Amino acid sequence: MSGTEQSAVLVSNARGQSPFVLVCDHASNRIPEKYGDLGLSMTERVSHIAWDPGALSVSRALSSLLDAPLVQSNVSRLIIDCNRDLDAPELIWTLSEATRIAANENLSADERQYRIDHYHRPFHASIETLLESRRHAGRESILICMHSFTPVYNGVARPWPIGLIHGIDPRYTQALRDALAAEDPALNIGWNQPYAALNGVTLTLEKHGDARGLEAVMIELRNDEILEPVGVDFWSARLARCLEAARHARQGTMAV
Picture 1 (cartoon, one colour):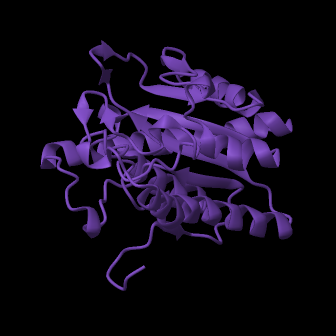
Picture 2 (tube, one colour):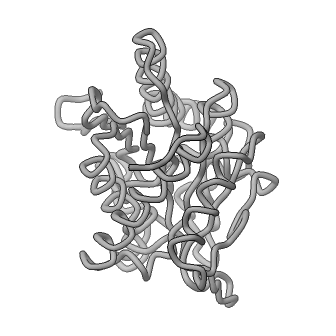
Picture 3 (spheres, rainbow, N blue to C red):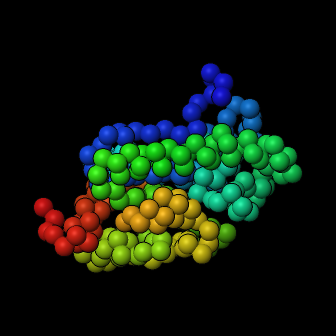
């Protein structure tokens, strides 16, 4: 990596005392300098095809509210999608919704491997290093994978302001759903919406949560809810309360 190239991953508040560990796979729309603009317009490069708008802002706010460590990818998913397995067709997108990414077509094997080695593997290695350090220290870890989704996809409106996606063990996700519903019974909570594990979108949840036997959840917020500071503040505060309530419910204790 050159001296001018930014790190592929950033770990913040690694010594945070919270039991929660926050991960943001699609935190950035940054395209490394060597790739230019991928042939895309500025509008396309700031749209949801390049990252999860608002997800990092909520993740950072939660990190502060909970005193939780945060691991974030620092490269656009248009370079490589850190939440896809290495053999997934969408690991390197060539068509995202209706946008063709011609620069990603017909990549050489060497370029594909370069992106895996320089962007994908460092991200997941950082998560593993953090979780392993906490395990050695006897620390509890609950994995929270933060994402956002677009209100309309391929012409279909998505009505849920929040969706919850579980891995192999759904119990913590169920407890979080119950906590959110208790706080606002009218809240339209998507269960395995707008995606589910069968759509191949849960690599981080499975690789670092399920594989370690951790309590874990993938949270999807509709991005029009969190594009402004007021929405970020509202949802981060709500999630901080409900994540804690779900943890206490799973442990059979009263939240304080």
